Length: 332
Image (tube, rainbow, N blue to C red; front, side, top):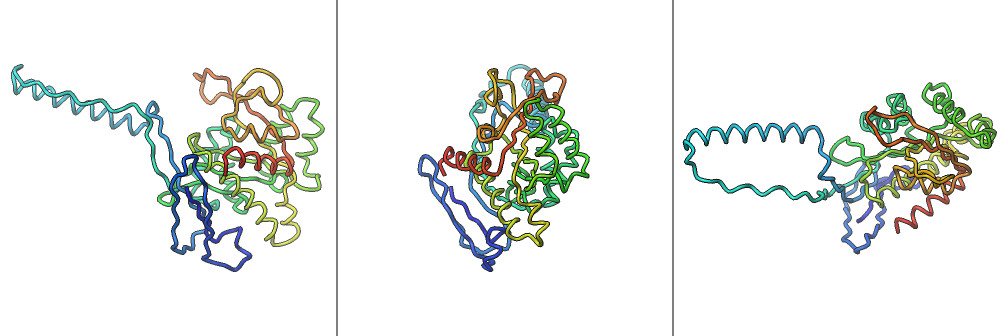
C-alpha cells in the first residue's frame, strides 16, 4: 500500500505548490506499493486499500434486483413448460454463487471538509443514537469547521467512508446540538467526575476543549483508520500554526477532547466494561483522564442489544499518547 500526500495544509507554508510527498505503508505480507508522479491541484491524500463486503448483508438495491430476477425466471419457466407440454429436455442447474466475502479494491482519498460531503457525513452521524436527533446540524457544523476536519472518500464520487473532526464547544456554544451534548455529558456524569466535567465544558479553561467526532464504516482497513487520525492531528497543528490572529489561534489550540463513543455492555467495571464499536475508541479510553458510560437510546424498537455511550475525556497529551499506541498497533 502506498500513500501520497499532495501539497495541502501541512505544506502550506513551504511554498511548494504541486510538490508531492510519498510514504509507504507496509502490509504484513509485504504487498506491492504504487505511486503516481503526476502533479495535481487537489489537496488530498490518496491511499490504496481493500473493502471486504459481507455476503450475508445486502442493500435494498440488491434485494430489489434479486426479486425482479426471480420473477423473470419464473415467467421463463412457465413459458418453457407450455411449449414442451411437459416433455421438455432437462436443463443444467446453475451453480449457486459462492458465499465468500467479496474483496473490493478502493483508492481512498483524504479530503478537506466540503459541502458536497454533507449527506455522507449526516448518514454516518445518524448511526450514533446519541447524535441522531441532531444529525443534520452536526453535519453542517463539522463541514463548516473545515480547518480541523478530514473526510475519507474516493476520487470517483462523493461517498463518505469516514470522517474525523474536533469542534470547539465554547465558540459554538450557541449551537443547540452542542448545548444538548454538553447537557447530556453533565446529566449522565457520575458525581466523582462532575467537578472535572463542569470545568472542561465551562469554556473557562486556559486552552479550549472540543467535541471529538469520528465515524466510519466498520470495514474500513486498520491502516486507513490510523491515517485518518494522523490527518486530523496534522489539521490541528496546521490550524494553530496558520491562524489569522491570536484569538483564532487560541480557539484552535485544543487542550482537551470529549468523545461520545458508541459501545455495548461488556460486564466488569471501569473503561473495560464497554465493548467499543470502533477499536480505536478503546485506545483513546485507556489514555483518558476519566471515562464513564450511560445507556444510549435505541435506534429501533426491535434492537435486542443494549446500546451504550462511553464519554471519553482526554487531554492533548493523552490524545497524542493514544496516537502513538494506535500507530504501534497498526504497525505503520
